[in-house]
Length: 149
Image (cartoon, rainbow, N blue to C red):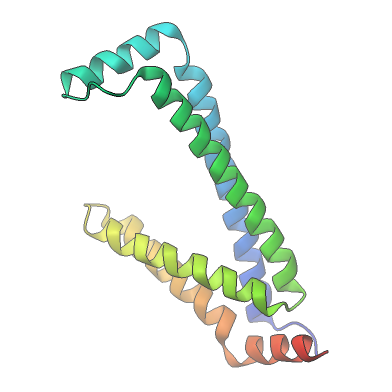
C-alpha cells in the first residue's frame, strides 16, 4: 500500500512547522545578540525597575531569549525527525505529533482569550486538520500495515 495523500499532507505540514520554528529560533537568537549590548541591557533593567521588577537583570533576559531560541530550534529538529518517521508509517511518530498538536490546540484556545482571536482560530483549525490527517481511515490503515510488517 502506498502512502495516502492525507498522510503526505501531514508530513508536509510537519516540514512547514519545522521551517517556521527554525526561522523563529534564529530570530530569537539574533535578537539576543542584538540585545546583548551594554546600553541595551541597561535600558532593559531600567524598564523592568520602572514596572516594579527588580530581581531580573538585563543579562538574564538576554540569556533567556537566547535559550528560548535554542529550544525552538531544537523543536524544529524534532519536527524534521518526526516528519521523516511519519513518512515511513511509524505509529510512535504519529503519536508524538498528535501530542504536539493537542498542546498547540490548547495554546490556540489560550490565544482566543488573550485578544489574539485570529492567531488562536488559525492554530485551532490547523491542529484539528493535522489530527484528522493523522488519524483518518486511510492514514490509520497505512500505519497499521507498516507497523505489522
